[in-house]
Image (cartoon, rainbow, N blue to C red):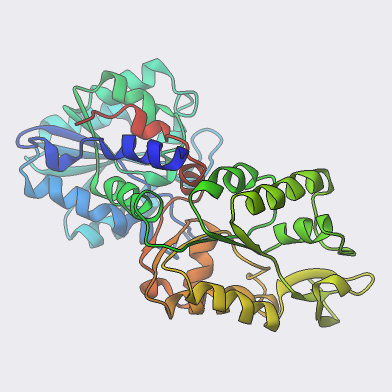
Length: 403
């Protein structure tokens, strides 16, 4: 099983608890890519709060200095709208500590020399450097020159081989995982390597193409799969239903059939919607109907699961001991089509199962349903969690020291 082998390897990664930090310069790759409104007010600081244990651990263990490196958005060059200055006050409030801002690596070097021991420095958006996403050697070496210890703690970007997540480790003296990165991999190990059975995967989202590798590779790990969201339309069409105007990937009909067949040979039960909520227009909907999945009205598109499907999926959830969820199960951003996703979130919260929630839109849907505190673990990385479920070894883990 790919997932078990790759996670076992990643679990061997050294963490900050395995090394001495006293009087050392620490560089921590954090994920402060937080959502902000047009006035730069942070609407969700979860990613910042998740980084606090690692930062505070370094402070408490007498690190000489701590430099925080992060990206924010996808700037084209040095765009002030994407400056990390906008998050500085929130960071200081969360840490209850003054944080110095370095607008360049050279500035960070100067601050390291002048600030007192234990100071925290926030480096300007690392994506202002052209070499970041190209994993340039020059930028990697520059970042490594800032530290004695490189700490990888940005799970949300751990699937990217960038200079600050991958290249820097080649030149750092010691390179270890932070507490968040360790917590993420241990949670995935609990769900995939040593799970309580039966194991249920709930998978949704818009496209089968983005989850095709997951669905094939996960069959040796799980006992049951619920497929919802727009991607279920492709599977329903594959078994002969006329999905009318529903979003489907016709080029993947054969792949969907192969997955259904492969699941059957491996004795994995796949559940698809039995009824759907459909509409004539997603944004300007005048008509909404609930029908059996095989009877979507002409000119309509399926946008959510129906009540019978919710009941069926809830029963499947309540008979599971480990639940992994990746991808929303309808157009949850629109209130009229959010009921299915939110009801599934509540069904999971009502169980005693270990629930592992993928990041990104799935985490956002959990938040909107008001069920964040009732899940066992919510990952901070959507793309990274998907690649872990597919059985891949994440680049950020590849380059860290092993026990």
